[in-house]
Image 1 (cartoon, rainbow, N blue to C red):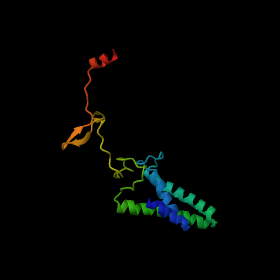
Image 2: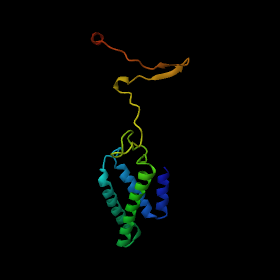
Image 3: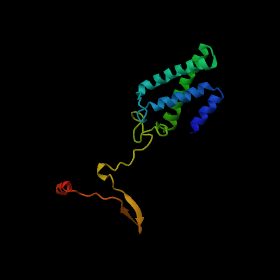
Image 4: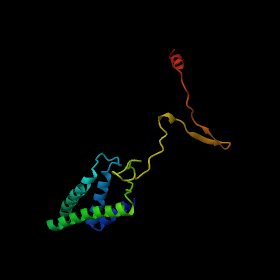
Length: 162
């Protein structure tokens, strides 16, 4: 939640360019295939989407701060450039392609793009045959099964119907 505090501090100081760059980066991150967000932007189109979001930030800067259009457009371009270069520097170089995890929004085991490692490792999938089997409380130093599979024959099933 440090990013939320940083964003509110930037907005409070009227530092619109870095605040817009953080929002652009977050929105592009949410549009990758490893999140539960319904929009998936292909890797080649993400920087175009970031540029469009930079343009939207320019319009919002113009409306909120009464800047001239050239000043607002330069602010939007800087927001876009800061978001893209920060992603390239932090994710591409410093984290070797591993994306940041978005709390409650990232799917485990799904890579954010082709050739990238998953942000969260896949869960231990017991498979459909092992559903309901687990280990329970240790009793006397041994683990006891909580539930056991029971093989049911067709004759037993027919006996239940009678």
